[in-house]
Image 1 (tube, rainbow, N blue to C red):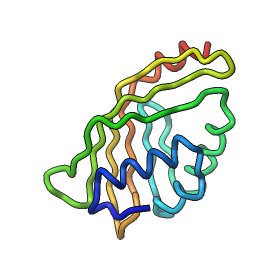
Image 2: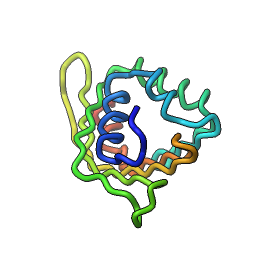
Image 3: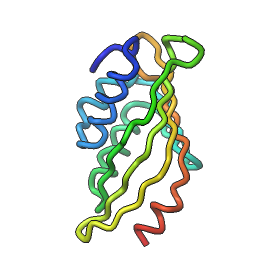
Image 4: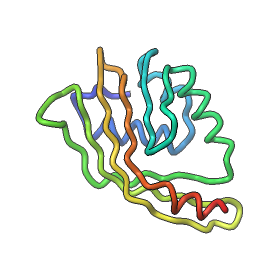
Length: 130
């Protein structure tokens, strides 16, 4: 995984790991005390809980593809990366899909993500899965 001082490359690498269910790469990018807050879902606290959540998500009959539109460092602060993107969710096996705008913020400590926030409306995804 690239260093957060290369925000666009880091974001592409991280979301490629998410899209391919590369649990080891995701685990390598986050701190032991990482906090993940995804929309209005309950917060996920700690690397082990985040990895368990990622493994569970990998078993769902839906694929994700993150199409990054923009990446920047918040206020020039190298410890914060913001990504704006469209996430395409495809249901298996019929391939029905929906694309949803999304923004994600990452805060880093010692080169690892320790705060990971996803701003998205999951209702189109829930409708796809219904």
